[in-house]
Image (cartoon, rainbow over all chains, first blue to last red):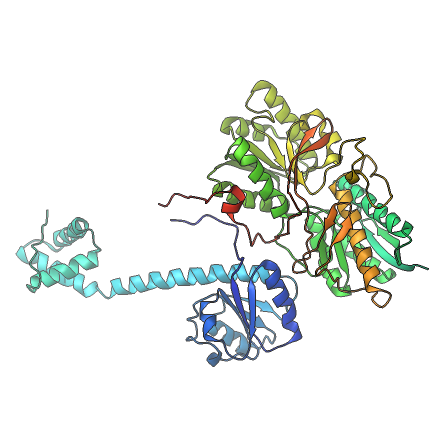
Length: 200
Length: 381
């Protein structure tokens, strides 16, 4: 199902701003409030409640890994880096932390809404990709199972190609993935299952 | 002895949208006259006017010129969103404040700008909420090819979808294009329940006229069955459209009351009579109100503060709009919302909000259930 473009409803969303108290964060806090978010300023560490936040802004200049209650790159919400020093080391660190978008300090009136939407889109895309990679990875790891199943099915003198066709037909009949079907066949071969494969 | 305060005016006296900018300028000037004539006030405004002649690129340099050559720190000005975006860096550089008197597409809340006219939760959303239950859910969206049309129609798509309706078409014309025959053909073929018109200037006038002719051929396309809706159409553009505007709908924070009506609303500003006929519109009233609100703030701040950060919190202002407030969080005005039908060269209000409506420039509080008075049900596939 594809989501149609919607009014990006940020009303009531929570944003944690991980930055030492500084006059330069005032425009950010003001702007977040104007957009309709609840903004919370914290330093130097994110409290446990921050795990439930919708966005997290962090200081790329003075930030360090231990500030976050998650592993680098595994934030459960979109991250926005606030970059002052453009030293390559700091930018690298911000990227490693998993910044989905950034603001350049001093933060002014503009750019914040865009940073929120870009970060959210990037985060969602990243999460969807990670899930897809996970699925693909598990399928790749089943390659051996498929080979075993094809070998088992071709045992009766059937050619390799026909055996693979049978495997696909079985997967469709059982309404499972080809990897799952292969696993069942291998288990049957080992006599671990009672069902008989029904191949056309 | 009144304190003299210079006040910038940045409106185009020529160019494409001259009718609108002239109305805003007249409103600001009337506001200045009202403040200066009011003996209870401690300030008198000295206008410092610059004319960008409808050229977007002239706004920023002329705004900078106002700040450099005068002591003005407040400017009433700009008509298009493009020009407003142009002057914002100048405002930030000089610490100046722009009082913007036009409806716009929302999604902005700059600290250097006070937004004195409607944003989408005060124009588009209530207009669709009025129209959809009465005329039907399916709309056709039109716009001039720039940000106002794109963004307003984008929000409209969502609102129409939330009402269970369908967008039967969405078409854009280049600014100034008056060839609307294709739009008319598509509208005729798709038979929507209403048309949302975000065309501006000559394109819009040409569309109204062609739609009027379509209505003569096909009875579905009349204001009673399939009205044209506009979010920025005011009295000052009705003469350019002529009889073709008759019966169609607009939304705004102010419409000129009936001529001769001795209502309080008719008087614009304390003891200043009514607006000139060719300027009486929400563009005029917004700019007029901006000057009044600024004067109130300067009166309250006293001589100590020449360029105060506006203290909007907890305050109300008596303006030609009526009693309004400015939301300190986003610096947009709380405004009345009126839906009106064009009738005999003016607008008659057909529905109005019981009280002023708080601004929600990012539609953060938009709730379909509240807009349409029932939970929005959507098919799950």
